[in-house]
View 1 (cartoon, rainbow, N blue to C red):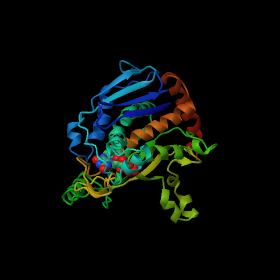
View 2: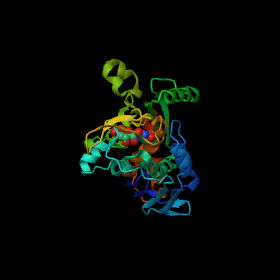
View 3: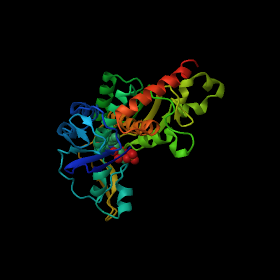
View 4: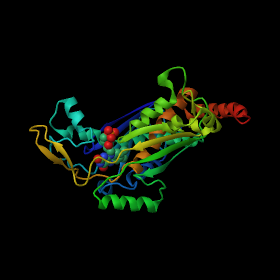
Length: 339
Ligand SMILES: Cc1cc2nc3c(=O)[nH]c(=O)nc-3n(C[C@H](O)[C@H](O)[C@H](O)COP(=O)(O)O)c2cc1C
């Protein structure tokens, strides 16, 4: 299974293709719409989200509400289509400067249109199919915010207060989150080659989310500071992966998201045409991306886990795959339950 997206932030549509997804998976438009809404209406987002409706179309790969095995292609509409004026002022902390150098352009807009996290709407649309497949196979994938800025215990009230404080201060926030997958079959991924290790593949998917700057599995960085004796007492420190494979325990991934670089008051930059110091101002910017990124991460993880699951169990249709997964769980469960 593989997937790709295309489209720009203010183009007519974002598009995505999911190829190799099995036939026979029941998924409704309402299910996909609900996932997109979770991303769109996550706390901390800008006024653009009030405009976007994430209307989408499934162009291929579905017969009614059931996948056919053919490539699934999706379109997600952009309501906001007014292109920002051409600008030779790169926004610090964004893809602008490196992208302008890379593609030899003085128009930062050409870079930001595709580098924008608006693209993640297409990834969530494709990821909905993977999430649904896992759901049918009894795998639960969910996420939780661990921190917002410096605030560690996040409730709706503490998050709202911290976001309001940051807005008043003209500031933005980062944060951390975890993605958990329960009831994954043991043995997904592989130790036989570095790039088949599941942690490497999930790390790539998580670090592929705009603004994610840190990734760890289970105990992660904390493991560096404890001894082997202490580490050996808690099997959760592996985060569900040993030797690049699922070990039958819950998969636990942690990510750190940097504060949104687009500050309401603008950020000092330089005009690349004349090198004059210039203020770069974002028209609309989220106060934090951490809540929305968490939803994206669930979908990105679901896609990678679906790739690994299909590698292990193969099959063109759910009717082939499900009995294989059930049988495997029965067989490995007999051993795992006695340890
Ligand atoms: C869902 C989502 C929404 C985001 N919204 C904004 C935003 O409104 N303004 C902004 O400056 N950055 C936003 N970001 C972060 C930037 O896209 C990201 O920092 C930038 O593309 C540079 O990429 P890098 O931080 O991975 O290097 C968002 C990220 C995500 C995942």
